[in-house]
Length: 170
Image 1 (cartoon, one colour):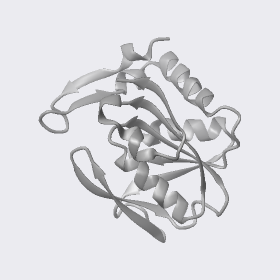
Image 2: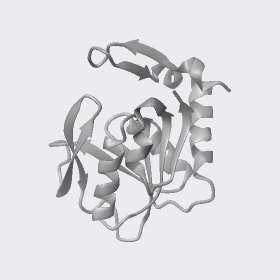
Image 3: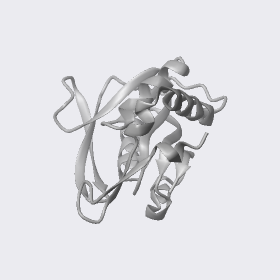
């Protein structure tokens, strides 16, 4: 199946000069959503995963589905001020600014195998910050898993030392 047919380009969003890859057409089509979920699951291979970590907010679409298929827990990483319990924070750079991510202190146990999922790998700043959070909690990062990778932004370079898997490349 060609998932590219279900990705819509939005010019100048969220700001001038950015071409946003909109996955809502893919999410809205039940057969395409099911096949994309299965394809992302197959990227994981035979690895044993204890937790799937998804970043706010695009990592919340496929992250819980992957966790269910992998018989793993799901851990949300949120922007600053959105998690209610004790947490740790990490600042990071976006392709169009900076922000802070947070994770609950008790969400990853030392030695747990973790799959990181987000829908888009752009510059890699968000994923790198999540890797840093997980490692601070003692997690073992198995792979970083993405629906879309924007190759021209070289985000993979920010994730040296980690296995990076992407379903679609632009």
